[in-house]
Length: 127
Image (cartoon, rainbow, N blue to C red; front, side, top):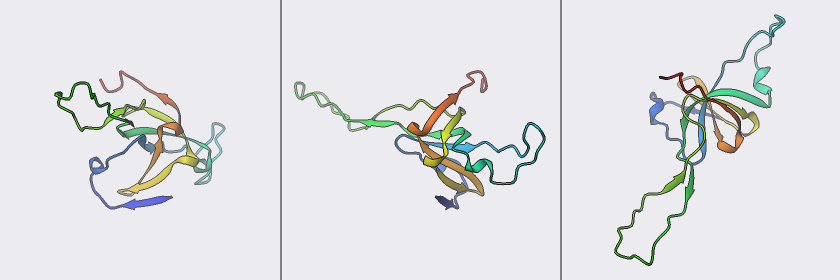
C-alpha cells in the first residue's frame, strides 16, 4: 500500500500506538561477487533493514482508579507501556506487514513493534 503525502516537515507526522516510522536503507546495486542487480530485486525480500525515525507512544494501559481515596485528584492522561525501538536504531523488520508511505518524494515504511525482528543500537553514535 502506498500513501502519498504532500507535507513539507517530517515533524508534523505523529506516529500512534505501537507503530514505528522507518526509513529503509538503500539497497546495494551489486552483489559481493560484482554482479549488478536489477532494480526492485531487494524490495521483494521478506526481511528488510532500515533506520528508526519516529516511535509511537506504545501500548495503552487502562488507568487505575482508586475508589478508596476519592479525595485524590485523578489524572485523565493516558498511560502507555513504552516501545523498545529508539530513534536512530537500525531495525530488521518483516516486509509483508509494512505500510509504505511516500513523503517529500522519499520512501518510508510504518511497521508495528511485533514486525521488528532485531534492533541494532549504537549508544555512542549520537554523543
